[in-house]
Length: 222
Image 1: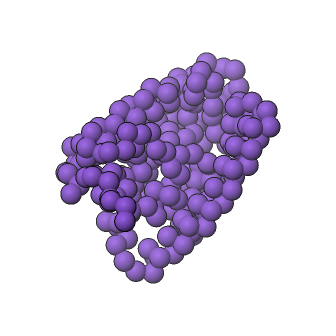
Image 2 (image 1 turned 90 degrees about the vertical axis):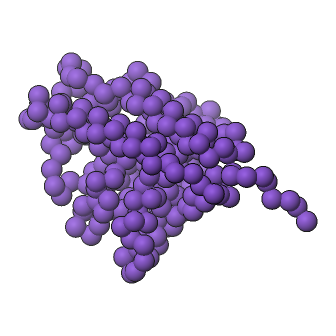
């Protein structure tokens, strides 16, 4: 049986609220640079993975909002197709690394890829906007990953100029900690459960049940 994970999800929601506050702070300080607006879905085509806590939180929100019906089926169909394409792209990146391409070059290639999020509606708005991942909440303001700066190409931030920058490594460390808390709470027999990262598409189609979480003894082989 899956224990109540509400306290962990509440801490995740607090972290998401901090991300919103960071975005607002930068937006208010540099309104001429942050160009995010309704109808812009540039960040909804980015390729990135979710930590366990984010994936499970998004999955829970999806089930609550779309427990049955045609719209749920349409989203799941898009998620399945997106996941197949994402898997192909990741294979290509892995092959490139085996052929000697540097991690930096591969990350730059990944940043240029365009993969439409299955939660992006026909009106170019997010179908689970209130529960969107932290990466989505901070897209559009300067950020740093492994010491390297990043910013949306549609913004008006001047390259090389000093701006408040969000340290994504620290945020990812906190997400990893929450994922570890989930693994500990469910007493998973999978020692690396907290290290599993998946794209939004896989988070939507996955069943986060006892079998996936490794709860209880391993099934006996016949």
